Image (cartoon, rainbow over all chains, first blue to last red; front, side, top):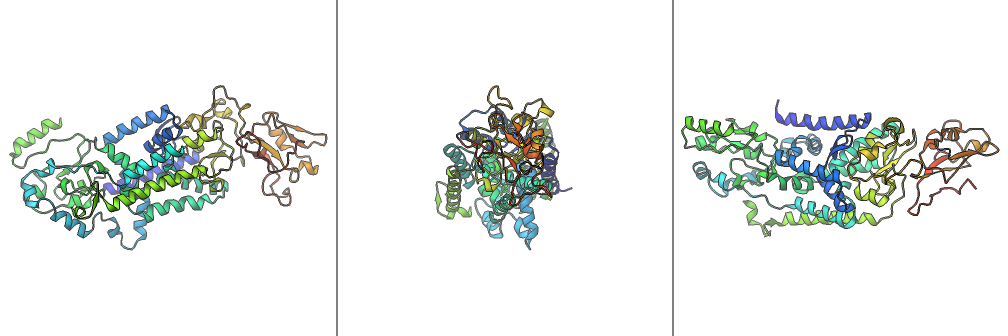
Length: 316
Length: 223
């Protein structure tokens, strides 16, 4: 099965599991504080905001924050691709539009052309190892401003401000409101307002995830420390390095705008990687892998036998 | 990079700066909602400190989910934008027994709250923690039509109600803790017993205002 489909299933499974939780009172919480009874992994932004807003050190929030930081260091932004319900909702928008292919393309034709013509030429890149030396550094973007703004606002006004509009929270709030409407006849304008606000966020702000989401900003900052499950190219089989052809599929398919072959040309730094495995699957020669531990780059010039041995040693 | 041709501000494109500044302003604007007046609500045990609740609640919905009697409900937008999705108590079908039945009187909502938005002071008991105070509307109450209904009186677990000479129930305001047992059993809105103009049950738990005074909708009926 394609990982894209597995990712839909995992995100849907999270929604279904939490919905079952709402109906059965088993105490698993929502994505904002998932866990079992009084043990919960809090949303890091929620944990930070609540402590800043109440000017109190909440032990459980602090522990949850540490756990989340460790998780982010281990799996980067995997939450975005595998669990977050927002991409699921954006998929609904894709179904509604007449040209879904256009919606999902991460870069327009002109952007791709511009990227290809910039910096070093393909020929240069294939012979010299420039992609390993010049990794694009993560830059501050609008998401980081919103992260800062929401934390600042929590300090000033004394409540977790972003939680009011967080699309993840609104998703589960909508589900709960529907359950309450049909289960208990709880009529309220919230049943209109909450899903509407959610729809506005994911439909009007098409680039919510990459331009606005402060949670994504938080994860990308810590994602810089992530070394596990990074897309790694085997230069011996990669079409560009092995045969000198102009492939670039891995860079085109990446929803985060990373080009694993040419990090220096990427629109985003590697810390944005959500481990979605699109690049692994698109690679025509299966040269791209996401190994658990980082593997030293194999050299094109090295003889195959020696290189293989070297890599085995390193990976054990 | 194509963006290099655009004018940049400290390495960021104009678009990034505009989006970022707009988002930050939006966050600060949302924060201003704190100064809009909020309707006082009946909060679950441990949520009586309104400032603490609003500061800490991240709307994670754990308390609604865990409540074994399904009495915790998300507040409506009608209760104020800031209150929306914060926990309140809904006594339509059941009341709050402080999880006596399932957890020996240790409220599960307080136990699961990950941010201390619901937090009981040391030594807090169900009797001493006032969630609200029940109010009877004598216009709509069946007992006041001398029908002899006493469901609320029988349901009260705290002996906070008494019957007068005509078997009409009265709330003892200084004993009532607002558990909602009376409201949950009131039949005044059911078919055949509904009074003209009634839009809620004849006995309703009212929240307290910031001074701890009961927010009565009707004139106190106990006098």
